Image 1 (cartoon, one colour):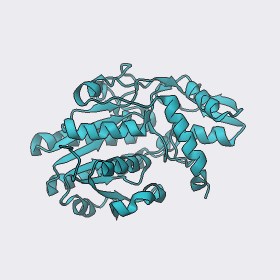
Image 2 (image 1 turned 90 degrees about the vertical axis):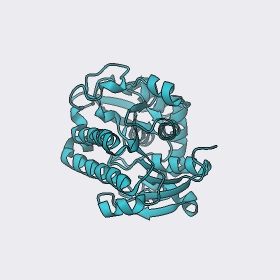
Image 3 (image 1 turned 60 degrees about the vertical axis):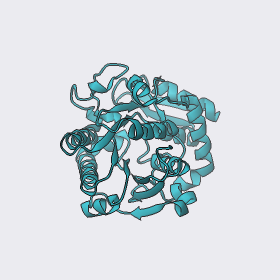
Length: 326
């Protein structure tokens, strides 16, 4: 029998770009979806086409009473809500990023425990890994040293969530899955220049400027996870491995920021002069996950290559860019 059919599912951060794709997939699988969001990043449009098919609850997850209210009579919680910002914002707001992320994690897991939710997905982050770790990075390297300094507050808040998940699993026997997505991107991503992560930021810069500045020398490497692959990994983790035994959900296609940028330039057909500013922080020198554990234990298999995903993302932005210019 199909696992998701008729399941009552709550998704926090549902109006974000990743959350909205998860909502769509769960509806497709026959689940009954309750979506909660505070619209802090103005994503009203992401759920507009399916608002009549879901129950929507606006609200702030820093309110524990709200968290308990929305968890009642729910089978599965996907906790995607987080304050996520780009590197420039992160380095200036460690305290804010720590508190806001820590409190919503504490509240949501406690609320799920108190209301008897059957399964819970905690969405952690690549930010739990230290700067110096093995490449490709296995899950066990996460707590081997301090987090990356440029995202210190956010990284530690996410580590705390993983510890909370393990404690609740051990003491209360909660079925809690933990995943660590690696740089999700795709249609409906955040293209606001003040808050956007690297891929939408570079896409917008390339499309709107003849000359652009990039922090660092471009040699730092990353892997990027297409949003559809993230959704696949999130659902498989809940269904097949609801234990606080984290999975890397990402791609093993490692690319330098310089290569990423020139892929975007090639796809858009733009002629752009690029200046690399080595005086600015660039984050960890390399990031690439070992995804063999997720492949083996839950059958995760990323399906969309970086070039394919960039093409889909650029096409979506060109059709929707007025949403980010108002």
